[in-house]
Image (cartoon, rainbow, N blue to C red; front, side, top):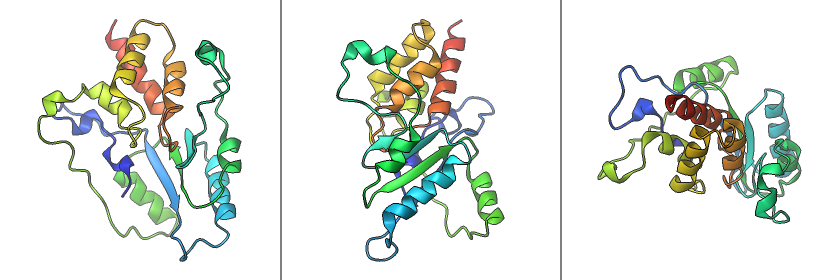
Length: 211
């Protein structure tokens, strides 16, 4: 199991809207090796996995130790933040792999039904399904559903609720485009599984609701 199991959507909301739609644009494929079992030539195999993923147009690639295709930089000051190069850099992810880690590719797809279909088409037998039981307790203390949809795409908690709220507000105020804001948020995800495309959709939907 990984923390991506707990990605939130209105389909699993505490107070579900009428006919909620399952997430159709968030599908993550991991590659993980076990020490001393299947880690021969590990770096080359991880890099081969990510290059194979690149052929299928992922919205993000990640190395759990260094981040995704969009990363923070220590040589820039805050004034350069919105003027910096916003193009994803998958080659930086691939070249930066040095040893044991978890690598991932994030695609636009659907939940378990499509995952099972992918397994069948590639001759892989699905051995298990894991479910998130969601949140319990004083859920009224949690942020609203839009904020949770954004923050839970970083399972390590590096995209904070207040940061997500700020990006939502900026989208509503047309201070930055949803694409710019989604890419900015992705830089804070330490393992690179933040779904940039889905974040852009969520921010755009928040902006449209404000009209």
